[in-house]
Image (cartoon, rainbow over all chains, first blue to last red; front, side, top):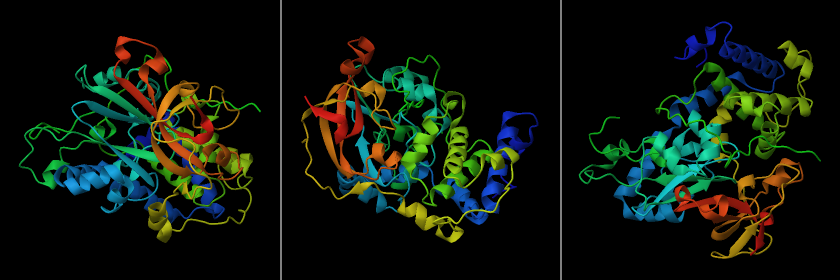
Length: 211
Length: 220
């Protein structure tokens, strides 16, 4: 991976903080490799894994299956770890999963106020805003204000539950299936399931809506 | 003991907006990928655990000004120095000045997939029965812990109810201090918006849950 990824141009911006960080990381990596603490080939596998193999399309498949298979939905709500494992999404930062379902009456939002805990096997690595101070500070106190910044306004009657991931349990929101999607199969449905809808800062897209 | 976490942000009155971001590459620069990868690879050596990593990051004096992977990198440098396997002089020099130590394990490329798949489950066989049942009223401890803990400040001294019993899990507080796993029952505790923030229209119809180990809780 190293040396030919699409972000390489960012790293040659002299005098920038990015340039300084790049130098610092390269130096530390070379120290660790020289001492025999890391295998450079293992680093390349790790990078490839989190850049290309693990991401929110995994979670979207879980949600689409739950929308189309009532038995799977029941299993997911009862034992999310086992149900998600059955689709092949396992491992680090997803060892103990809980799925929470949005309804007309209740909307779920996930945060980690203490760091940035996030269900990697189903959603990949978190976006910048999820790790940011304003999201972590504000979403437990004023979730409607935060949702407005995502362009989302829920009815005043909707109850909001914010799940603060303070231990090693990781949460996946099952968004509501959008109207007009009854005829779609699991693959087309998965395309409607956005990353943000599985965190709770968005809704699933309506069929035909822009991506 | 003078422990101060800079990471306990829940409920802080920040004005800054949240900036949404399209799905796509989770990394925004090449150095972020490398910082992430070396942190995971060094974690796999077994010299420290995830709770020690969190403690190393959250007590960084410049936590508030570092971006996410900047915290990871600074936390890793700190752990390496504290464990005596990389010298501060080597980090300053940007190169190895001495041969390496023998580590318990070095993550090989062929083992990455299985290591990630295995993860680090924290569920343990409980030694006691759970003190609280679903629906029980509980109150969270009011005092700040003088060490790494996972009870957020905004949720201290609050009344709530047990919603889920999550089993016995490695106790982050002792695990971070090198005092062992000491598994404790873990619960999802639900607290109302009014209890947390006081009555107010914008807080109506809000509940917040935390996952709390039994030592964080009292009846009531």
